[in-house]
Length: 102
Image 1 (tube, rainbow, N blue to C red):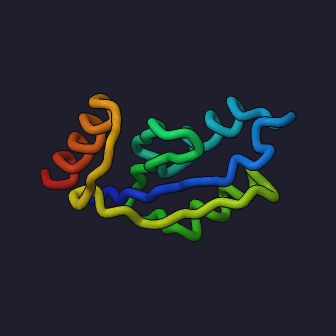
Image 2 (cartoon, rainbow, N blue to C red):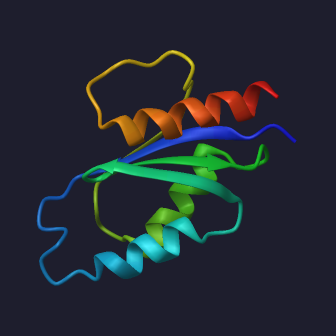
């Protein structure tokens, strides 16, 4: 089964004020269909998901665990990437690319 990557980014605007971020994180990364995840940038996740998972599935789930917060979900092509990140972040991304190729 081929796994897909999605990027999830959200508006922090008041997000940490009175919100249980640890609970959100745990619910997100342990959700059904999540194969792997990356969280090297504040308010951003890369989610590796089973092939049958869609952006709408992720949106519907995020709305249940993070209601009334603005966020964006988009399928991500990891092999076409660039930026300035910690070496561990690049290592994870490159490992996911290798996993998809095999």
